[in-house]
Structures are given as C-alpha cells and as structure tokens.
View 1 (cartoon, one colour):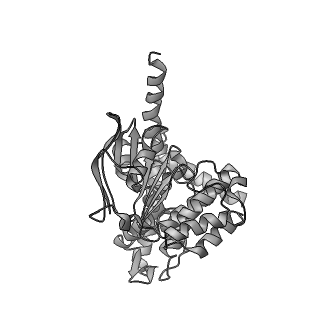
View 2: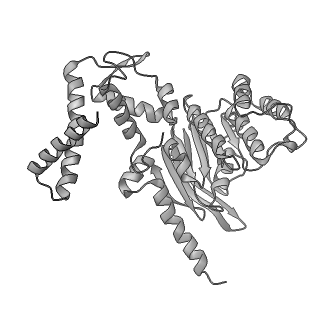
View 3: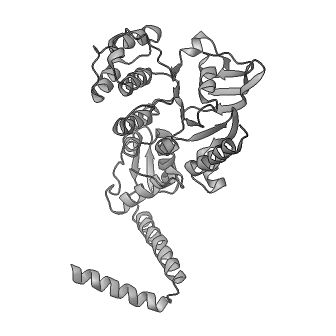
Length: 239
Length: 123
C-alpha cells in the first residue's frame, strides 16, 4: 500500500506541487490526470524517489522509502533513461542488472508482438518505437508498484490499443499502477481511482465510480469542464 | 469493447455476463471464463472483473468454486428469474418511452402486434 502524507515540493519558495495526500491499495489502477505543467511528472518523480520532497512523506507498506522498497517500484520517466549508444538488448540487460525481477520471456513476447528487434540501436529507432521499448522494459519487471509517466505518448493508435491490453494484464499480478495522462478517454475503462491535478494542486481525487455517480458525469466530461476553464483563464490573463 | 463512459464499468460487465447466461452462451452449471480471460476480453483490470463476478455471486447467478473459478447456477428458478427480470427491465423502458410520446397502453399493444406481424412477414 502506498501512502502519501502532506507531500509538498517547492522550488525557491515557490510551491510546484502539493500538498498531496493519498492512499493507494493493491489492485488499484490510478489515473493521474491533468494538463501539461499540472505537476503529474513531479508527483511521480517524488513517489519514485528520484526527486526529494520539500516536506511531507511517501511510505510504502507502512515503511519509509529505501533502496529495498524501491526494488518494488517500476518507474517509467517521461525522459529517455537509456544512453543513446545502447541497442534494445543493452537496455534490457541494463534493466535486468538493476532489477532481478525482470521477466525475459515476457519481454521477448512483447518485443515480437510490437515487431521490435533486440539488435536495433536506440538512436535509430523512431520516436514511437523508442517509447515502446521504454514501456516494454518497464512492464517486464514484476514490480509491486508501476509508475508510468505518459506511457502511450508518441505511439500510433493500433499500438496504443495493444499497450492498453498489456496494461490491463499487468493488473493480474497483485500490484498497483499509477498512470499519468491527459488523454482521459482511452484509459477510462482501466481506471479504478482518479487524481486530477490543476496547477500543482489536487482538484479532485477518489474512487472513479463514486466520483462519476456523485457528479453525474463521465471522467472525461469532468476533465473537460475543468480545463476549459483553465483555457479561458489563460486567454483573459493580462499580458 | 466500447463501454458507456457514464456508467461504472463493472456494472456494464455484469449486464453483459447476465445476457450471456440468459442465451446460454454460458450454459447452466458450467464454468464461466476465468477472471483473467474475461478481463482480457474487455481490456479491464482483474479487480474490476472480480468485482462484477462477486456481485453476480451475491445475486445468486454465479457460484464461487473456491480456487477453481466460478460456475453458472443450475437452479432453474433462479435462471428463469434472471430472464424475467431482464425482460421486465426492457419492457419498462419501452413502456416509459412510448408513454412520453403520448401513446396509450391499448394503442401500444396494437402497435406491438403490428410490429411483430411485420417481423413475421419479413421472415
């Protein structure tokens, strides 16, 4: 179980994110939603332990985050974590070296399914194919918590559909998943929980079905209502 | 599978499984697909699917076979009730819609007969 308590990140006294409070149970699939710059990546980096919080705490199964607990977490950052000289096979070995939970068989199946060859150099891959490799390598870990920062960005429609199925399958093995996105529609049916961030603050959070029932709207409609306002604010702001 | 984004997904899965039981795609007394298999078919998490199955067990249409999965009940009365409830829901909806159009019950019966006859003729 992931627990986040009064988590705040400031840059030079300016609050970038928070305060965030949330609890995530095993089996939950949380959609972290918000437009660019709303703090999604910052929150994921804080949970992953890549960035240190200014105040507040992230705990995992009642303990503090440590190098041991970080072995339970598979983090897909929005940037490319692999040096560009690597081949696909190097990226796989690199991940396997740090994380013994890596599943080679699953990885080979996925590479084949997406028509990727392990001898290909990362630098020669298209943007979409590089995104696929990054995501596949992350999904092939048998982690307890997956933190996926816009995992479908740059993928074509048919690949996105296939990846959604792999994401659903991930949920079979007693884990929790946090996925950030600003495309609500395509991930809607996977989500069990929702956090909507607006300018670094939580605007709405909770169980997806409860939120929908209370507001009488789909998550996509709620999201659109929220961020059309943001657009309007931006247009009327003095230059 | 496209779900209605305004309704809970597990609830929509319950409705689909009920229909499959009614038309005996899942025959009485047989095992239904595993949670994983059906979660794959609908592209949802296993938690969501599990929730649907648990609800169907609670309503008495599925029986949990500890560790093995779930099977359809073979209680005739229960299965008839499932079909009757599904029909009643749809009749109710039709009745309401038609009433909103200002059509009386007697007229509805006549129109329904006429409609069914037309269906027969087309066959």
